[in-house]
Image (cartoon, rainbow, N blue to C red; front, side, top):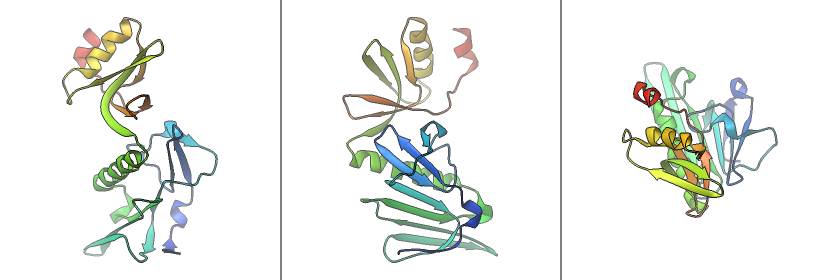
Length: 185
């Protein structure tokens, strides 16, 4: 056993996520910015990524860092990024920080790449059995173009993030950003 858990009782609800049968995640905390509830399942899974928030004593190996500020302490331990990845963290005041979200997104992308998939910033639409991936930098009109194409019979699959293996695409739902000029069109 790599870790002796000392204070995970506050985070005892287990969330299982199955991302299109490609990647499985088990977490004791909800992080919708990284793992949308769309992928939540009730079955127990053998996870590709295990995420736990709470106090812990780090085991051997992996990457460990600790920060102290007055009486507050944050810790992070990652292990087995090329196997079944484990990420344990304790943050000041028990909040999931933007740094943890950034790290988990990176691990998510790494695990997808290991399985031959890529998470791409792009809109994904369909017409019949054919999928169309619109890739462009942020704020260049992907959402506007997507909304126009929907008016012409295209099917909506994803606006911002898409998983692909180069042959097929899968939605990765994130909140849709609508600006006033989108509504006018």
